[in-house]
Length: 382
Image 1 (cartoon, one colour):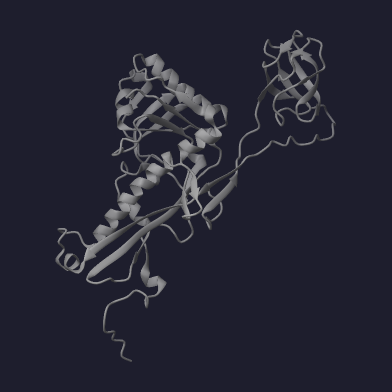
Image 2: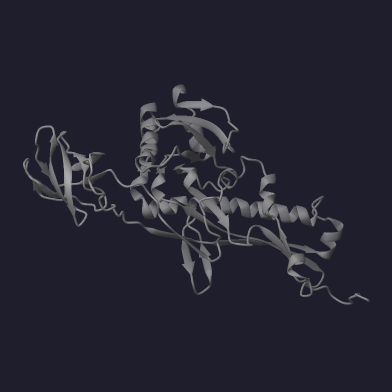
């Protein structure tokens, strides 16, 4: 059978298998320090396939340990008082008042009205806004099980974002290699590398947005999720690098925010200018040297915090985007993932005249299990 075709080449007769070439694994060819986040992050936190432009999940966080008094005044012998947050305290919880008296909860109504009796210590009064902390549970022998505390949850979501560009060569360029020694494969790989760079920037600084008219979406990065869902985790550094104690104090504030919300040891992301400043801090706070251990890709230093030794990852910042931000991230609870069948790929487009075109495209989204396990500092004064 004669399969000869005369005339201009078109991709219309080609199969999808011929047209669609997956190049997602090309990212592994790039040096660790260029795209550390793309190499460090996984997709395990995204339990389901990304089948739509909108990926949804329910925030998971530990039950809080404290709440504030919502009654104007609580007398020393009061047996009831209100707290400002439901789903924190339950029957048989042992609570400690600000000055040390401990009471035990005997009943909870509506989640916020507590009935208590003195447990240990000297009876004390409380006023509006003071903090009560759950320090234990003392359940009696033989007691029937209580109802579970229902902690309110937040439904979170993120959009996918399409990262796309085109490699375009004339017939002469393609055959004469006018770009030097670069073949079309080299150009495609370089174009995908450029897109990978902006994807990494979006993972940190992207803002979740939608334009339904143009069917255009953008993903929210880590900073967006902190700003939107955990604004208390934003720390104004104040631009003050003059004393070691000031710098270390701000860093510990950021780490503490994560620890108090049940996060694990965070990783620190920073640009080169901030890293140069941090290296001037006293020796017992900084350990030099890169460590290629599990998930250690891209680590240039380690910082000794109250939670232990934290990896510092330097973000290559050609656009100067990270000059005024240092992020602290529990990497076990964040991840990015391609939409199904939309990981980095290239397709040859229909030939027009004496030219050749290949589209390079990837569609990705980000998931943050709970934004409270991240924090960041700004106003670095650099």
